[in-house]
Image 1 (cartoon, rainbow, N blue to C red):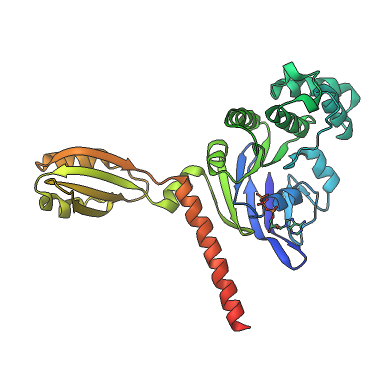
Image 2: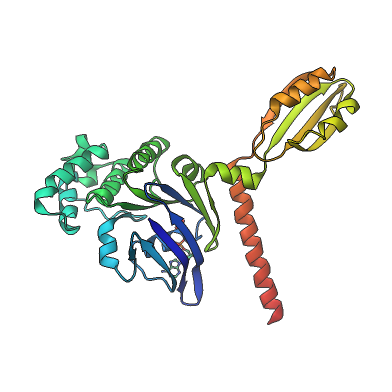
Length: 326
Ligand SMILES: Nc1ncnc2c1ncn2[C@@H]1O[C@H](COP(=O)(O)OP(=O)(O)OP(=O)(O)O)[C@@H](O)[C@H]1O
């Protein structure tokens, strides 16, 4: 549905994004995740037809966004970081006005406004002036203005920024309820947000895509299979070498616990394996006491920090080589 190929944007001689490539399938939610200044807003603005790219292409359906910016604007709903709301209008009045701007035929306007008010849970605020709404409600109106013309594609730039935790959950649930019928790109600097809402996550750092995958795959493939921490008693030497031969285990470290005859055993697993039962049975059958066993799973947070740090270090190294060569 959305194909972005080798997209770059320079502001003067500074690249905001370089060679950005990713795609989004129909009905999917893609989380576009990156730290501040990574290039998220720049990419969203190019996709929405607001600014041209310096190089590369972006297509929405069959339309290249720059060549067919009018056709593209009809097919997308865009929520910029700061939603363009008219504070002196009521929710209903404003959404009616947006349907006019977006070229919705007159006969369909009331229906579109009413359905959107319902979908965005704005019924009780329908006649309220926007200036009197809380930030959470304003954000819902921002999303409502993006979807009121029923576009197949929705682009949301940091939709929960500045909201309190309850409002964040409400807005996230609203976004999730839009998937399937719409294809959604959502930019965020919040890892937890990207992983709970998105079907797939594209991580961007320093203007470059670092990786794209499902939240589950990112954890499994990039942070390894995690492991187990055990607290055991008995003749540890007997099991240490044999544990190592289990195909699901990549390493075993044993350290004696202070003031005790017990040991802490740290086991690292091969990705995509869950050998917990096997390990426990093995320890107990070997005549050892198993006092405690804990699964240590890598978090997406670990992956994110590792990937964005790697990208920054690589960029810094390249810059150093360039400076040394000059
Ligand atoms: N109009 C502009 N002129 C000059 N530089 C810009 C402009 N817009 C963005 N940049 C630069 O491009 C880079 C990417 O900015 P962008 O706003 O796309 O990042 P972001 O990931 O959306 O960050 P944030 O989460 O802080 O909004 C930054 O270094 C920024 O300073």
